[in-house]
Amino acid sequence: MMQDKKIKVAIIGVGNCASTLVQGMFYYDKFRENGEGAPGIMNWDLGGYTPADVIVVAAFDVDRRKIGLDVTEAIFAGENCAYRHDCIITPLGVPVLMGPVLDGVAAHTRERFQPASLPPVDVGKALIESKADMALCFLPTGSDEASDYYAGQAINVAKIGWLSGMPSKVAKNPKFVADAEKNRCPVVGDDVKSQMGGTITHRALIDLMNERGITVKRTYQVNYAGNGDFANMVDDKANRLDKKHVSKHAGVTAFLKGGTMSAGAGFVENMEDRKTCVIHFDSCNFGGAPVGVKLILEVEDSPNFAGTVIEAIRYIKIARDRGIGGVLPTVSAFCMKSPPTQIPDQEAVELLKAFVRGENMG
Image (tube, rainbow, N blue to C red):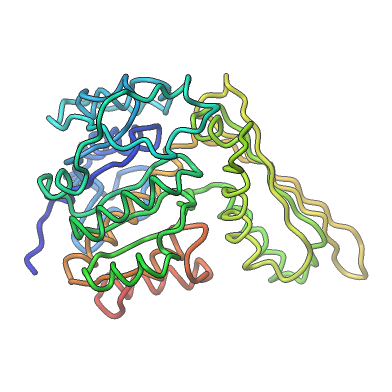
């Protein structure tokens, strides 16, 4: 298949994650001639694709303050509070379309996210007309019905790639997996593992302790921030926070040789998109002597998310160029908290290099 240099993406949920990704398109465009000097990127060139090659061609949301706006305006509307990148943003001519609400807005966040009283567009038709290579799902945690709807439209109607950014199970859903294989739609999921977030940092500390013979008795991770994702998860009868913790727990305990792990979260409104993560270990070394570790990680939450998404987008595009469908196991293991198969990160890195060279199926 002939390679199209542009990677055309459709965004589902124009929140903070979408904001930082769209801003990043413009930010990295200025490094097009000198990509090796671009900050904050794992790989500038992946199979001939760079971060500057990503372009948004469709966008869906339900917030009345965003519907109809160009996506470059909508990313700063409503409750969005993502970090402002140093770049000049120009309109893309891509209006935000009304999607189905379904379970995408929790009862306790309806005032905050203000769903519009408009009929939804035909999502499958809009995806086909946009000629998107893939759909990126940035819906709130717990939006399982909405996630399934959009995944079905992408995989079975538009027959394009799918990135499952939140914990809703698509990459672990046997029907979606079978449909994606049949329709040659590459799928990456579920629940993005941030570029340097709590999950990857927690795992790195576990790897270090395993290598040094430290026995972990108990460990926990607590995250708190003031963005829409955290507002959505807390004070909720639909157990959205529990779903996020299940995903995070899976991403950490797969490499924990013993002991127990727990997680917690809190919403602190004036923190906006800045997130603090506290990781604690109660462990022991030689002779059972105690070892305590406490680490505090502070990040802008959405750029941390986008730093991984910009990698996954390009792996999906490489797979699409090659006619590969179904779940990309190594890409999912490297980029996601809760992939179908957990693979140690360093092993996944080598397998991904081989995938780019065309030596495996991703």
